[in-house]
Length: 437
Image 1 (cartoon, rainbow, N blue to C red):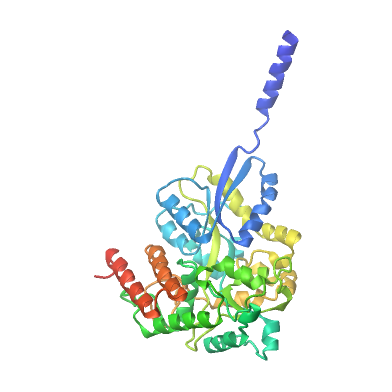
Image 2: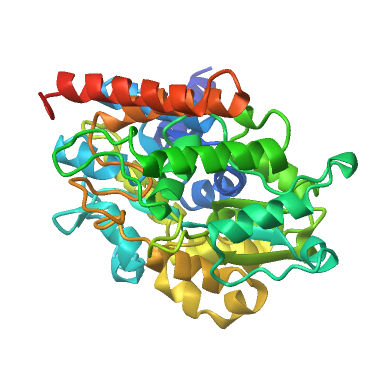
């Protein structure tokens, strides 16, 4: 009996001496975009290298993610160890000391390789506060076969007049093909990302130099009228419910002749696993109205660590893994170079293997380089940001305005009524926040 007890005691001692697997569990909030879903599928590579860390994913639709993450960090809820956030949140939250500066991503991380425009957007005073997972601008994606059939040639730098005219000619509702697909779903990062970028090209702006809202101007009326008329004549039914993912599905299934949206979509629409039109897609810059600004934005979905996290060291390891050059190589080995996360590293755009299989690489980089967050509009403005104004109040204001403009698209409100409502709601909020009297 003593021998048995001794053996059991020895076995217990042995068990205690072995480190427990997955001592730390990281809860990561992310968006339901294809690149992020692919990252989840590759998480076993990270956990194999870090067996003491487990990963739990919370994957949410874009508007819901923003709401949940903002509430959690503002209330110090501590639900998440790693947040997926955009270029809008990074400088605002960093200045409030809500984010951990990313100083410890490892000697081989190569911060200097990050594209300057993207790196600047997620840094404050030269310090990185979020690591970009993928970066994007926006551009025009179009069906080369439908253009050829209609005898149309897409310019490298199309004008809005060309886009509107072509969309009407390419619409064949009886065949279920629509000339253009554009975002209509309400949200500051959904329809307003597109419409703000579009408005920049028409010479509009959110605020003048004194922070007075500008929705009562001819430039905004021209923007919204062009958009609503174009979508009514050449867009798909139910467009006021369509965001990025819905339009991606429409384009992939052959329903859209043109789609102006995030450059990150390029690898999805050219992937034969997902897209029925993969070999029939061309790329051009986002349209302009001849005023010197294209309708292209600048954005990065990035990984950040909330301040006060008790799992910073483990979180830094994951952030470094997911946004590293090695992760890019991992995706390339599994999915091919065309499907790696774009828009963050200079070295990717110098990689001959990538350039060979990614016809969208050069227009993506050109679009990112063309975006200027410090001078986003034709007329001067007091804010930074291309498809948003980088002030804390914008998130609420942008969503309210987005709801009005989505209503104009659905036909439940006129363009004039939507603009008037946007003007009064924005004025009210800017007065409440103390920007104007």
